[in-house]
Length: 130
Image (tube, rainbow, N blue to C red):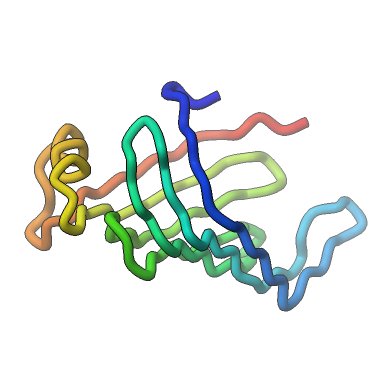
C-alpha cells in the first residue's frame, strides 16, 4: 500500500508490439507502450498530468520503462527497471513543476533541484513476488 491515499483518473492504453514468454512464464522479449491519457490526480494534490508515456522493453532480462510526459503540470522523465525473476527494481526520475505553484512547493520538500530545475528521485528495492 502507498503511504498516502491516492485518487487518480484518466484512461490507460497498453499497446504491445511484441511479447514472448518463456516456459517459466517470465518474459523473453517485450516491446510496447503504456499511456495514461487525460491523466489527473485528485489527491493528495490536484494535478493535471495530461499524457504520461512509458516505452516498454526487455533489456538483459529486466523489464524497462522509459518514462516521459506530453504536457501537464509535471515535467517528467526517467527510467524504471524491474527484474521479474526476483522482484528487484530501480527507479530514476527527474521531476519539475510547470506553472503549478502548489506542485513546485511540494517538490521543494524533496530538497534542492539540480541546475536545470529538476528534482531527482532514485529508489531501489524489491517487490514481493507471489
